[in-house]
Amino acid sequence: MTTAIRLDDNLVRHAAAEGQVHRRSTPKQIEYWAEIGRAVAGEVSAEDLIAILQGIRKVSVEPVTAEPVSSDDLWAEVDQARESGELGRSIARGRTVYQSSAEKPGYLEAIHPDGTREVGQFRNGRFEALSDRDDAA
View 1 (cartoon, rainbow, N blue to C red):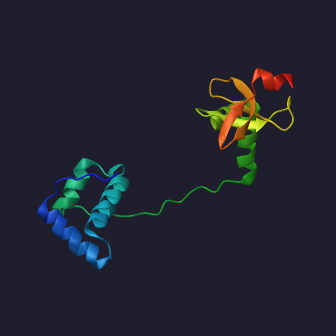
View 2 (view 1 turned 135 degrees about the vertical axis):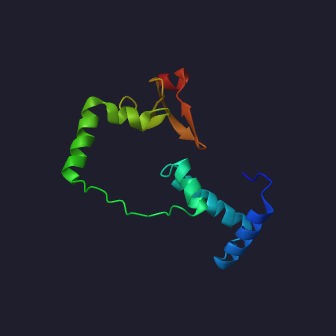
View 3 (view 1 turned 90 degrees about the vertical axis):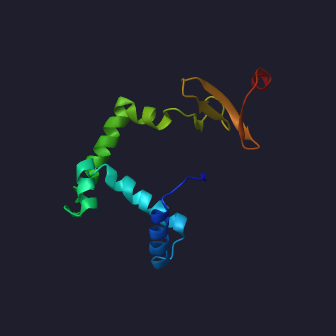
């Protein structure tokens, strides 16, 4: 979505100059700065940001080291979630999922977020439930 906003002329001039160095348009440079700001905002306090702008603090970047995860631990967690039913609930949460119908081979079963089920098939990209007339056949 594009929205027109007013920006400080000084900011736009700096963005144009910086963008030219990095081969970005002025709007793309401002978007880039905004993305950096969003990434850093949760890691730096407002007081630290002010101090950085005043030149009395500096930014130090440290690598994040992830703890290694063993595949055995990962699969044990998946198995535990499957056994408790949480895996199925988290996959289906808030959306309709489809599976092969055990009752009607060749058809699908739609499982809706409220738990209701319908047997049917996709036609022209849309799921169509079997009607009572289809059931009689």
